[in-house]
Length: 628
Picture 1 (tube, rainbow, N blue to C red):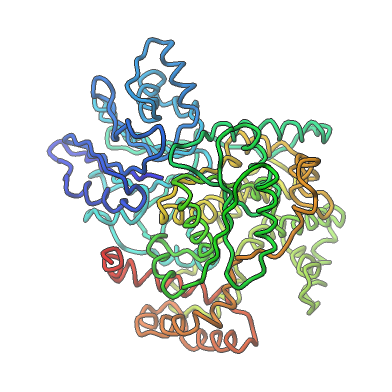
Picture 2 (cartoon, one colour):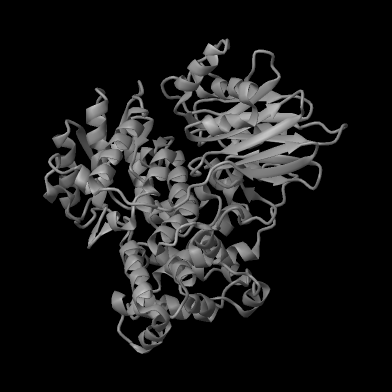
C-alpha cells in the first residue's frame, strides 16, 4: 500500500508548483507512512508515499532511468518482476535495485507502452518520458490499486491515488455532481469512471492513459470474455484450479516483517491456507475477527482449518464504537460509500496489521465463482427464462400480484423484466423507496440520470449468452472494483496494511471465465470446484455455513448504538438546507425503522454516510479530522 500523485502542465511558459505536488503527496501519508519522495522538472512533478515491506527498501521513488530521462512512481507490486528483470538482463540491461519500479522503467525503454501487457500484479503507476514530454498513467487489470485524475481545461493534468489528494490542488474543481449522488443512492457507490466531483475521473481497470502534445487518450489493454465454450470433465477443471491456486500463492513471497491470512472459514480461504502450507515454508498467522458478545462458532472453524495446515490463529474480539468510527470512515473513502461491511473490514484489517504489514485474503473470489446467495437465485431465474420463453413476462405479472415476500415470489416478479434489467435491479436499491425520500427539486434536477446505466452496459458488453456468466461479468466490472476492492483498499490503507489478493490474479480470472456455470453453482452448493479441490484435505464439516461472528448489521445498529448520532446527523440544519431529501419523508422512514414497523436500514444508512461525507469533505470538516 503506497500512494502516488503528480501534475503535468502544457504551456511553454507554465511551471509545476512544487508546493502543490508536495501537498498532494502528503495527503496520501496514511497510505504510505514510511516516507516520501519527489521528482520535479519544469513541466512535471511526481510524488510518492511508501510503505516498507521486504525487498522494497532499496528502491526509493520516484525512480529514474540510468540516463534520468524516464521517471516512474509506482503504487503496488509487480509480482513477476524477477522474471521480467531476467529477460531484460539477457538483453544487456543492468539493474541497481530489486524492486518493480526499475523493471517498469527499463521495460518501458525496451518495449514501450506494451510493457504493461507483460506485467503481472496489482499496480497503479505514473511514468514520465522527459524527451517526449509524455505522461502514461496505468492501472492493473482488475482495479485493485486506485488512480484518479482531472484534465484542467487545456492547461494540464493532475492525478493521484485518491480524490483527497487531488483536492489539494487549487486548480481542481470541488463542485460535486448531483447525478453522482443519484447513482450513489441507487448503488451504494459512485460507479466508475465518474466520481462524486463533476470534473474528476477514475481511470478504469485495465486502462492506460497517455498524455502527449496536450491531448489525453485512454485505451483498454485487457478484458476477459466470460464465455465457457466447450465443457471439459469436472476433474480437469479441479486439477487446473489446484495448479493455479498454488501458482498465485507461490508468487506471494514472505516478508521479513511478517504477514497474516484473513481467514473466514470459506472454501476459497481454506484453499488459500492449504496452498500456503504446501508451497511456502514460512509461517503465517490466520486472523479472524469476532464481536465480543456473539457465539464463536466461526472462529472455532477458522482455528481448526488453520491448525489443519500448521498455521497459527489469532482471533481478535472487538467492541464496536460506531459513533467514533463512522466519521473516520467517511473521511477515508473520500466519496460517499454506503456498504456497511466497511465497518467489519476496518476491524479485520486492523487486527491483521498487528501481525505484520502484509496480509493475504481470498477476497474477490465470490465475484468469479458465484459465491453470493443471489448468484444462485440469478441462475434459477436464467433457467426459468429459458424454459418459459415468451410466457416469462406473463408469469412475472402474476408474481407482481402475489403479496408473499419469499425469494421464489421475488424471482417470479423479476421475470416481467428483460434479463438485462433484472440483473441491474438485483444490484440496486428499490426505486420507489428512494424516490419517496428525495425532494422534488432534487428529482427534477436529476430527472435525466439513469443510475443503473453502468450495470446495463456491462451486461450487454459480455460475450456470453449464459445468464449467470453475464451477471458475474457485471459484478467483475462494477461491484468488484467500485465496492469490494474500494472497501478493501481504503480500510487496509487506514491500517497501513498492504493487502494481497491472489484469488483475483488476472490468470485466475481468465480461468474462471472458462468454467461452466453449472460447476460454479452446483445444485444448492456454491464454490463447488473449491470444495472438490479440498476433498480429503479438509473435513467437510469445517466448511459448512455458520453464523458469522462479526457481520455488518446496520438495521440493528441504527436502532441501537447509532440511534442518537444518526438522529443528530439526519435532522440537522445542514442536512435540511442541502435540499436533497424531503425532511418529512425521512422522519417517517426513521420513525418506522426505530419502532420496527419497517426495515429502512439501507436508505437510512446511505443518507447517514452521504451526510457524513458532506460534513467531512464539502463543509471543510476534513481538515479538522485529518489534523486530529
